Image (cartoon, rainbow, N blue to C red; front, top):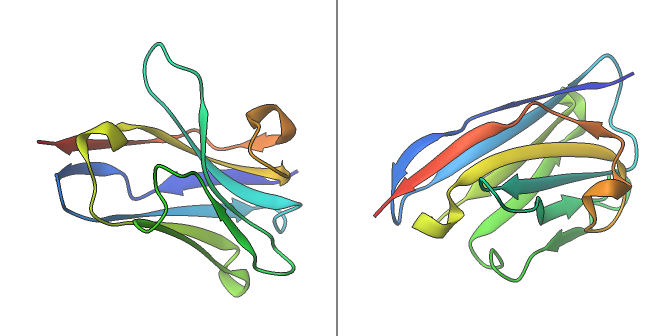
Length: 120
């Protein structure tokens, strides 16, 4: 069973950038790999996903043009490059695999999450 480990979160000023990493230990990614985020008191929302076979990417409208999801199969790692960050991007970001689409319940494997805080 794959364990997903996120890293790269932190505190950044508005307009800045961060790159999140999601490493799969134990086995390779199964299904699509997605990034989701969650703010306190809110539901977990889809951010981006990537197909491990075709490399096709999908983005939430709120991050299109600012975030880029990519993969390095040799390193068993998926990245989320986040540019032009806004305070409303502040959330805990989760990596997920073993699913497809934008619904969190479609994914079977989750990381522990990494906090991203964007100051204004």
